[in-house]
Image (tube, rainbow, N blue to C red; front, side, top):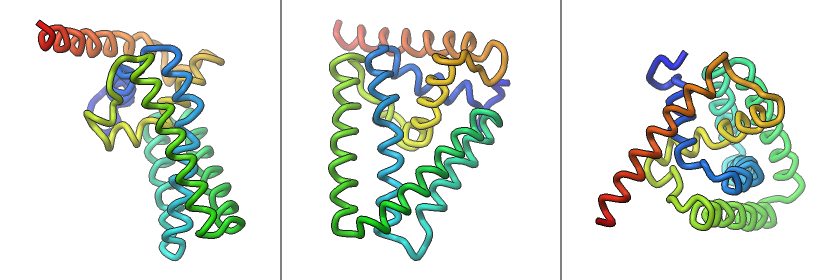
Length: 184
């Protein structure tokens, strides 16, 4: 189940989860990660409509999520498609001039809230400072898996969350030990 490599959901979830143990920070991410994804896709619609960059990005995210876990990945892929469809409608309605302003305001607000979540509540720099690509790719799926686990008890397979919790605890201890060494 937690094999290894690019499709190792436990590894990805543990990496991202190690940066998100404070419940307030996790809640902030639940609120603001998907709007970041939506407005990123909107930005692609308004800046590169002829190359279909928005569709390609949504398809890549959705396909990756399905490859990590068929059931929750299919839901995540559906959310990616809905973000693509909503952003296409917004791009057509808003046009470039208003569209980029909506993107800018939303992105600045949502990213600010995430940094507040990390600085004030988590007391740890965001995952994107250690692995930008993994953090940006996993954030929407991590949030979805957190919501599914919290509200319906979903696990990609039996024991997933127990396995991941052990990995997260080990990563957090490693980080805390490094932090303690720097302070001494």
